[in-house]
Length: 251
Image (cartoon, rainbow, N blue to C red; front, side, top):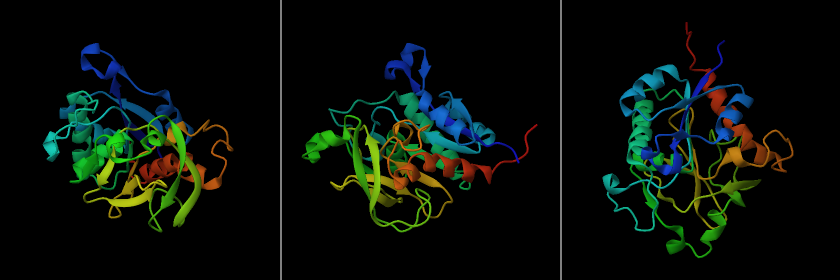
């Protein structure tokens, strides 16, 4: 059985295509390699989205700045820091291509989850300090807990409801207001939506936090509690396992 290839969306240096340079946090590639996948960084060529899906057995849509929202019925907030429009077009093209291959797993991280929600007809809180009293806990790489609101999801192994014994690392100024066609899976203690999924697909999960930043993923005690490992390192393990089911022979 072949090692699954996981495509990883990337960013522009300084969030500007005019920089002429792509960049990607090493943690994304490292964790995919660590859990048994082959990481493949994907340049921003929207017209190649279907070709990329033909090569890849799964996708990670990574974090970044804020999306433009005019195409989704909301003006972009004046406090937003929008991503380069070509990157947004590319990530949305990847999601559209993945819709035609729903058996292939997709994980959206932070911005990636927000784009999944917009793609599914949802809406965003575009500037948390305007809508949340203690927004800072989400904005500066702070740790906070989770409350699971469904019993079963590809987000975690087994079953879980109520307050999970785990900590996650948040770094975002926007959050999901309405998940559209997706399902809310977990929330922060203050009610901010932290995870979504599509239960009709084997693995289509968005998380608002950064599981690849959960301490040192090489340290089995880095998240302190077993459930924390499950929704951080374990999440990438399940992504790669789901991708393993889709692999086809390659020359």
